[in-house]
Image (cartoon, rainbow, N blue to C red; front, side):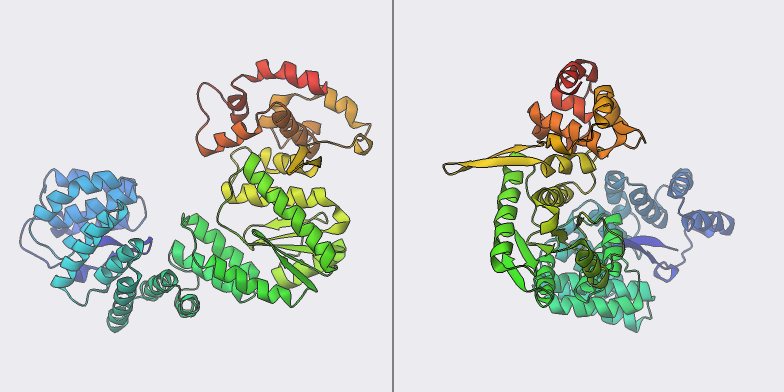
Length: 493
């Protein structure tokens, strides 16, 4: 028989050896029923599994094994609260191996980590060599920032898992737990070494946290392609907690980069590298720090993912060669690149300050919102930053964003601009006509900025579109497109 238990953030299976066959009536005593049940349970069709258990519960309302399965299956159906409400009934039922483990799993799914420790400890009183209970307790202690005890449980659980010939994925999860504990203790090199050992057992990684730490390890070892793959998998697992290893990883990566460039200048948020003179890089660094602080003040709050590397090249060919050789990026725009996964911006003096301002906004937006809810804004808002001018007024820096040089406008576009429909730009950004172009998206973001609605628009990204509006753009104005369009035509048409 089987009950699902959480170690890290992935589910493993408590095997039939944990459940003693007993004479009491149970649906699992019926071989036909049990075979049908296990067939559904192993198929991943958890909604159907829950229906089978609900029907069986009518006949066997207090069967502990059935209650174990139901708690686990409710969680797999994203019904953590229902599982929690069922837990008292399970714990009041006849004592059964696995009860405390399932209770620990249920508490973990509900974020009740102190209860997880209590139930795991009770499970260990029944079986002091239970690597599953030690894994549960280690993860709960990690979540409570009890890194020392978490490391002790992870090491002991790893020993028992090896002694009991647990599967490679199960064993690898203890390497994940050890790495997390080392990370919490600030022992970063131990965390990386532990990941390397776990990776040999389970090349894909078995939990979001492991994927995250593995990604960092690969980045440090100079394999950006694998690093990005692991970072993507970590994101799929929903790993959003701040990665305490990142500052350490970035500092080591910066040391490697320093050997490749003639000049390095550090600011509060950015690390600039280039082969130009120190004065030239200092000028770029000052501009970058001013821009990032203005973005924070006027547009988007910054996250913790700093410092961030900026590579400044003298030619597009030099930039392409560096990215291919050191970052595993064989195709990129000649106008620059921002990589959130590898934590850098590639730009160049020959591209002008507007390109750098554009790429820097990609960084700020990408950190704040992993994916912008409105596709048109992915390029539209950075495009706004690309065209700007300003001046110093006393101790203030006055900047006007989105100012297009008329000499750079294509006369052929003027007629297209007069035909532009604002709602079409915002709601259908991938069309092949002019309304789907970056130029049109820039005009939409300039319109937001000139009307004083860019910041309200960005704030709508934190929640669903507020009623009664159909789009965030309309919500930022508090008006429908029909009411906004006259102002749009006044400016552009």
